[in-house]
Amino acid sequence: VSFGYEDVAPEEKTARVRGVFSSVASSYDLMNDAMSGGMHRLWKDRFVRRVKPRAGERILDVAGGTGDIAFRMAASGASVTVSDINPEMLGVGMERAAKRGIEGLTWQEENAETLSFADAGFDAYTIAFGIRNVTRIQQALCEAHRVLKRGGRFFCLEFSTTLWPGFAEIYDAYSHKLVPKLGKALANDEDSYRYLIESIRRFPDMKSFEGMIAKAGFVQTRVEPLLGGLVAIHSGWKI
Ligand code: SAM
Image 1 (cartoon, rainbow, N blue to C red):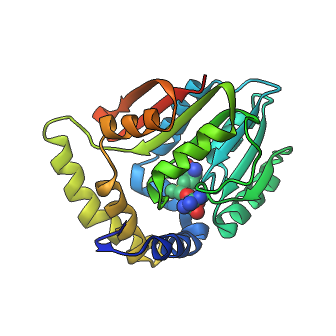
Image 2 (image 1 turned 60 degrees about the vertical axis):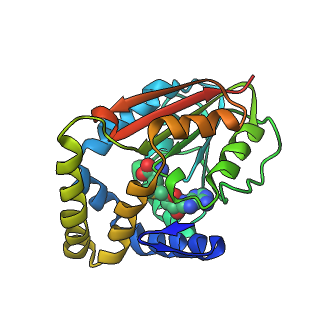
């Protein structure tokens, strides 16, 4: 499997990804704003509008990191479980929740590939900017399907490949030259941000990823491109 520019053994990738997020946890929010010009907030708002969380629902946010998606969903009164493989990211999230006075979230360390939850317990499964970091993506999608109830919905927000002519080149130049420099300047961590950019470049295109979601058993799969597909919202239903 690929880790940045290198091919590594699957276990090695999982360990290295853990290292990347331990290293970026404390600067994560600042870097998101710096790298996306604040746009990640709008993408996350739109994502949660599509998920439409409702009071009384049980929702699992996987790779939930510092809580960005969970905080937005909790406002609906849904009962949200935030899970992430990295305890440091969860730690930053818990601190943020306490500071903002957001209560009632459940925080749990989990690998998306091997969730500890029982079958068919959740109304919705969300994963935002997380799936491309997972070593065995197809296995994580099958786990998503397993933990959802019948009638449950799957939503994924992830970087993809923009189809807008010209924009792809500009973005490529920006991301490969500027993002690692931003990482160095703001977080003193060039390598982690180099990995993050390379992992975006290696992620399957919108159609292929939609195919993987269908292969996991989801129906009525859909993809909504943002900025021509620079970012995409994929969804599907379990019946
Ligand atoms: N969802 C948050 C957001 O949108 O801001 C965090 C996204 S962050 C870019 C990616 C997260 O995926 C990190 O917190 C990382 O620890 C987590 N992650 C990576 N591999 C994972 C895995 N196998 N299972 C669960 N979480 C994982």
